[in-house]
Amino acid sequence: MNQRRGSVVDDSRPIFVQIAELIENEIIAGALPEETQVPSTNEFAAFHRINPATAGKGVNVLVDDGILYKKRGIGMFVASGARERLVAKRRDQFQNEFIAPLIVEAEKLGIRETQLIDMIRKEGTA
Image (tube, rainbow, N blue to C red; front, side, top):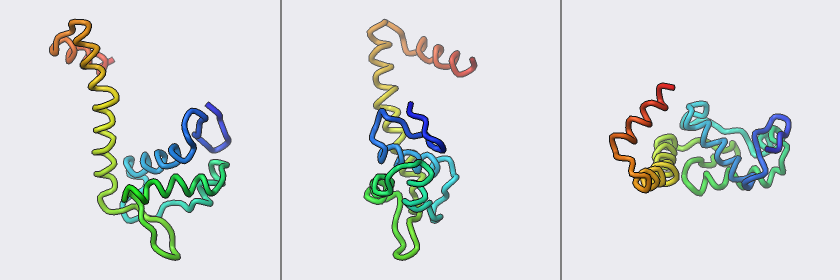
C-alpha cells in the first residue's frame, strides 16, 4: 500500500473509487449524517494529496448514485436515505463476494449447513 501522509489511498484500485468508498464509509459509520455537508473536492485533494479532478470524480460517482447532491454555491450534501441505500448495497456486495463463494466451497468440501454455521460461530467468538 502506498502510504501517503494523511491518506489511506493505495495503488491497487483507481483513486477516485477509493475516495467514493471513503465517503461511503463515513456515511455508513454516521460520521457524515444525512443532510450534512461533505468536504469539498479541494479539501479531499489536499488531505489525500491527489489531483482535485480525481477527488471530484469520486464525489461525482456518489452524486450519480444519488448518495450526494449539490446545493448550488454551497457544496455537496449527503442525501436523505443515503445510509440505508449504502448499507443495502454493501450487504448485496457481501452476499455476492463472500457468502455465495463460501457456500459453493463448503459444498465442494462436503461441509453441511450446520457445520458451516458452527464454524462461523466459532470464528465470531475467537
